[in-house]
Length: 110
Image (tube, rainbow, N blue to C red; front, side):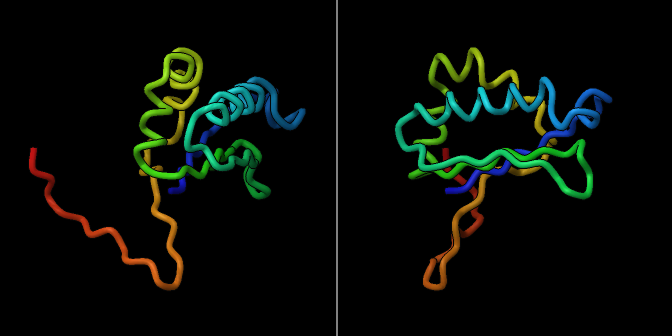
């Protein structure tokens, strides 16, 4: 499973020195997530075309592993406040390979 969180940093400080507080916050969140079971890898990037746009991508063993990571105490306390600043858009993706049977959108029964 792939998670893509994009962040917009409008502070002048960020554009001037290449990062600042948001960069530090995202590295800290990545480190927190990396300590969770099911985490595979994570990358932090900044747009070449728009230096105020950042991305944190993480790969997970499964959707369940990602959800459990978000509900851990340390991630709730220190990670979720940063992750909640992400651009409001879908962030969870299934990884697609040539033989992948794609997830089918359907109503969930509760």
